[in-house]
Image (cartoon, rainbow, N blue to C red; front, side, top):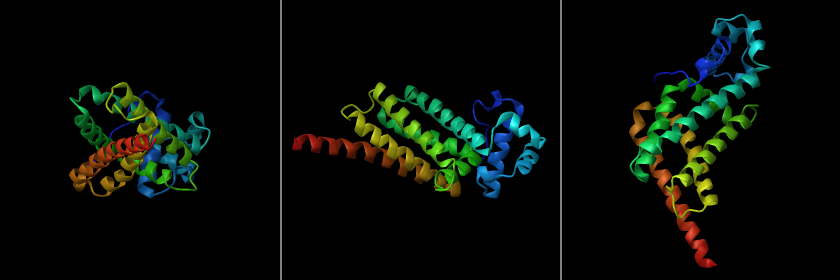
Length: 212
């Protein structure tokens, strides 16, 4: 898989950018949680003096928070652009899933680190990353409403669907990282899950209305 810089990271001060990129590389390569990275090891990987770290971050948690926010911001920014280029609802689903898998492939180190931290109960970054996923899910729901891509589905049901879909996509990202040759089947699985969520929640909503 290939790696690509996060959008916006080039606008950061050089030292800050190099520290974030080095933290992702070390975390992915060594399997070390970001808050547990050694300051001197991180600085050496970044090609900086270790004293440079505190010019940009309060501590490792601050670095992790900044990195997580950048990943979430780029995902939300680019996901917003997909519906404008799609012809109908089905195209939006297919394009969104394809984009997400491209994102995983292009930011492999960031995804490996983020997925590990998000599922570690002892990680101080867990809450930050989970909130980022919640923000992505809520943003997707609002976009779907504004573009009238799921008419008939109530806001609460739609938000439940996008939350389940977002968590599932991140879960399947690990499968893609481990087996990139399975991209086609993973893409099909996610698209099927997305459609099942919307159809199923609409059916449940209609059943609830009939009981009233």
